[in-house]
Image 1 (spheres, rainbow, N blue to C red):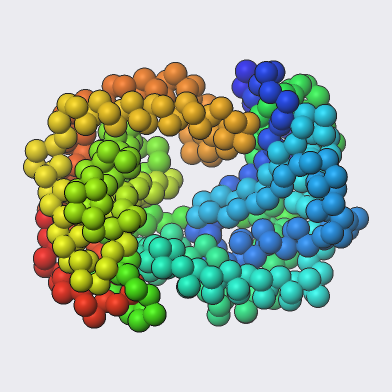
Image 2 (image 1 turned 180 degrees about the vertical axis):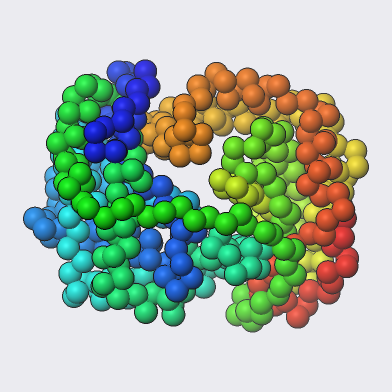
Length: 422
């Protein structure tokens, strides 16, 4: 059973009881991500995510790690474009410890100057790692040009220049303005007692009530996508990494189900058009897939492929042809059926763990402000018709040009912008 409570402090608590398991996953979710940062502070949310683990007023970084290791628990965090999450997974008998540690790191981080500088180097190494990872680099490059000079297009980890410029005072100010009760969700799923959880969270997060500063205001201008055509030469990379994309729907858009079905047909499964045609029939790529990136007020349908410099133009042509065919003719009934069954099966399997149930609860609350049952979601997928999937394809690609980002030996890529017109 799912329960929602609004605590006096302003915190929102969501719990789901799963009595047949022995674990509990708990997360502290901040309704802020990289798109809520000013340009000069790009990367500050991600930097803070790192720093809170480096010690609190009562625990060192080593003590935080030892506490979780001593109970066989797992703890980690991540930052996205629109939210930040700190989470732990423990045996139900150790839930009290997980609550205590998570409450400590998000309320009482020290931001020790020595640890700050040490962690700054870690983050800079992470940025270098992304620059050395072509599939991540091409996504960041595409996003930067797809949403130019807009927060949604900036890299989550920031840039080397912005991270180097972040001072302790800026970090503290941003932390205090963001980590406010009204911006936080506490979400737990597993073998738990909701009444006990409510009392324990109220006590553990009591320190948030005394903070006098107002919460960080939501100033999110609606993103305006542009169609990029950008190539970045990386001569040391053997392949050309391609990302092709078009604007799509926001997370809450009513026609998101036909979009998800369309994505599965295009390149979201092993039997999808792109995987079969580009990898299985032609042998042109080891990795090729399509994906939907959906945010509160924007979205993108993209195709990624890594291929040889001599075959990149052929891969682009095949991607363009499949998009054009879906726009003009739509899917057939057989592939529609396979795509729907794949989505339903994947969803049901993904929700068998406490961690995935916890994440699902949080995302539903962040984007919809309510909980949608699994049955309702499955019914939404089931209701998708061939005509609806075809209409979505026609809306997304008709009259548009494909955006493109390419990384690698791009001097061998002959494609021009006009050749990507659909």
